Length: 214
Image 1 (cartoon, helix red, strand yellow):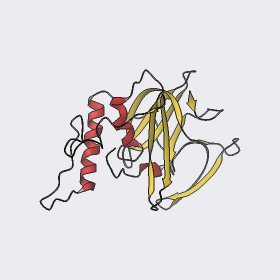
Image 2 (cartoon, rainbow, N blue to C red):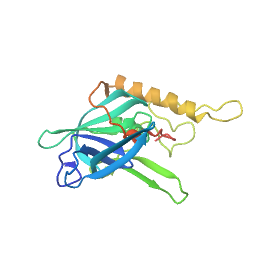
Image 3 (cartoon, helix red, strand yellow):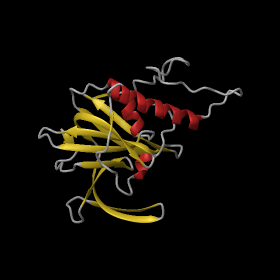
Image 4 (tube, rainbow, N blue to C red):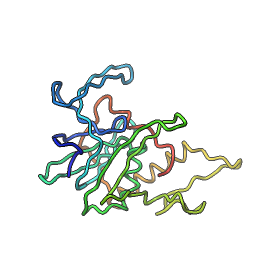
């Protein structure tokens, strides 16, 4: 149980470039340097990088951030040490899958999160979050891609509505969907609103908007 490394010492982690990253001091064994620029301000940090985390989820919180509500997943390991994993905004490609999977998760069992990011054969960036329990992938409770048209949305999630020309304003739809999803998970006790951790400069990459329902 814990981070997928032999030395799981991290506590606060963020998803950046398809990995979990923990800020550490320069000189920490195994740490890698990352540099960049956010809104014209350069940053530099040293990080330990993990492919995923497995543990008991104790709670999920939504915290105000630059890009909406940040999704934070709280884990504990066998020593009751807590890890807070920031998945980015509630409309991101890593935050949305977690929120949509919540009703299907059995929180009496361990949960594994593995972010990913790669370029497919068409040169498109593919980013997301793989969620598993007992080796089985946990899918969205709100969207079934195999269901017939008009029946894909579940649990009352709003469906996209085409205009008179038969076109869908996807940007507007996703904004409305994400707001509805946030309200649903809070009102039904799957998540709470509160402050527990502020992502640092350079972690904004995990806030890329989701471009499709999950």
